[in-house]
Length: 173
Image (cartoon, rainbow, N blue to C red; front, top):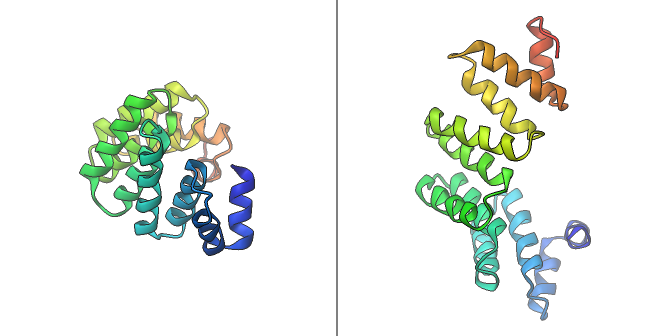
């Protein structure tokens, strides 16, 4: 996968897409173009490529998650949640999926559900720094001790923004 991403970065996404059109239609290639398209904000292309991944491999949990992320960016939270739920059914051990689904609920101000999803992400991967940081944000106005606890965990894992906030406010990590 790293070779393909490197090729795409150096040759440009257009040449990489041309390589796919020349009989290199693989799950890995479509997934890579989907990620690159998502990163560039080219959501139509991202959707197309992740859907091709799902056609080639209907049980690819990562493709469902990434497609869900695209729909989150498009503001279609219902579709985004549906795709993340499908991803969880296929792979209930992906902290990234729980974290990203937490972001969807966080964006919708469903903080109770977001907290549960961030906590599940941390249960699966105790080094999910983003989940700790977002828990800190969610708890900031309702349970300051929990906010500090989560900011400190994020800072201990190297999260710069958490470290800066803690230092600025007289806390150590």
